[in-house]
Amino acid sequence: MRGVRLPGDGTTETRVYDVPEPSDGEVLVKVRASGICGSDIGYIYRGYKGYVGVDGPAYRGVIAGHEPAGDIVSVGPGCRRFGVGDRVLLYHIVGCGRCPNCRSGYFINCSSAGRSSYGWQRDGGHAEYLLAAERTCIALPDELSYVDGALISCGFGTAHQGLLRIQVNGGDDLLVVGLGPVGLAAAMVARGLGARHVYGVEVSPLRQKWAMGLGFFDAVLAADDDVQSRLRDLTGGRGCSRVIECSGSTPGRSTAMAGAAEWGRVSLVGEGGRLETEVSDLLLHKQLTIFASWVTSLQDMERLAVDLVRWQLRPESIVSDRFGLDHADEAYLLAAGASAGKVVIIPTGGLND
Ligand SMILES: [Zn+2]
Ligand SMILES: [Zn+2]
Image 1 (cartoon, rainbow, N blue to C red):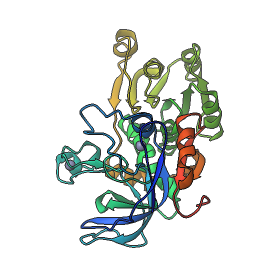
Image 2: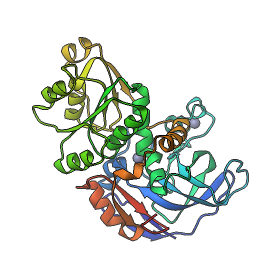
Image 3: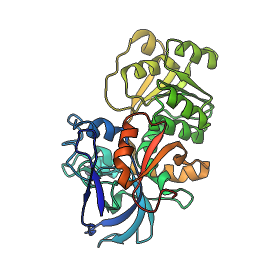
Image 4: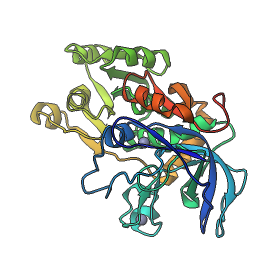
């Protein structure tokens, strides 16, 4: 089978691998869709930078891609929940399953040395087949496509958890800062959760236009000097009761703090960079609560897949570009540069699935 790895110099490399055999507790997944994630771009594609202290050794030269969805085509001994023919998406980190964080579904925070992420420390989804731990499999509802599933497996899960932490509900005006794929996911899921108004702030004119066309935003604003006064105009002078920061940039975080209303709640989900803020007027005097949210739990990801069906929302609507495995280079170049929305690789099953 073909698989794509990331040498770390802004290129991709396709190699031929043996199709792996599932061993105890593992399933073999025929990969039907595999997302390209901003963290792969930032931490692997352009050069290897590890998460300091938390994620252990970073990329180990494996097949890349941590947002896979597909069909189970064979199962190893000891699998109890899933079988051949099941459609699945994957929670993208394999935790030990025994530590307190794993037991609460937060494989992302597994404290075991054996913790591994697909596409970072073990082979990931940019290949025709993927060996998966059964405990990371989540049923993909029939109503959702494989591309929907791939998007849930990281970005939508992360956005959803960020919104759960700030308890978005029907009385809220939500501000989304940074309208890359995670910010777009946040807007869509916020609609499902019932947010009254959703406003976006984004630097790129291309992304502003793409975001507005999706139909989830009441307004999309340029990140310029007028942004705060425009947000106050839109919210009757109050600011936004809930804010989710998805840009991962220092100015984006400042926009988030300034855009929050009194007693507001702010969720930080964008990776990297720094948080720099004036404290008295922007935080204390507004009685703000700030949440730092990293990925999600297995259970909440499972719940999101079911809720998206109930809400009749399709994550794949934020996908702007799809490529076959043979065009992974082009796909990464676009995702790292000027894509309007999410970029997805379709390893098997054709580009129309
Ligand atoms: Zn990701
Ligand atoms: Zn663990």
